[in-house]
Image (tube, rainbow, N blue to C red; front, side, top):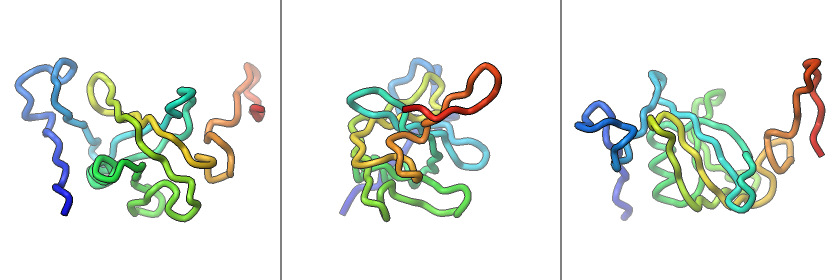
Length: 133
């Protein structure tokens, strides 16, 4: 049986969050934290999603990317239906611990459009969108 992962409540820290060595993710009022997945080899941004405490705990426990779907209102494992899983190499948090970066080895495309990255378009100075190569 796996030991449940717990996080430090940021409100209980006795030091500045920017200097603490404790993992104290700051979930928003909706219970979510922004999570960006990047490619472990290239550093490319693959996708942006949201995690609740359960998704973050499952990610830590399994070593695979788990997220919270705001549109479906449910927990989901990246690649659960497509097979395009994310093996987590490292989890990083920003200075005030209100965002997460998952450094991953991505199997297949990360985007539901079957592209390597969800960030496949660029915005030109005139405001038009163009597809990247």
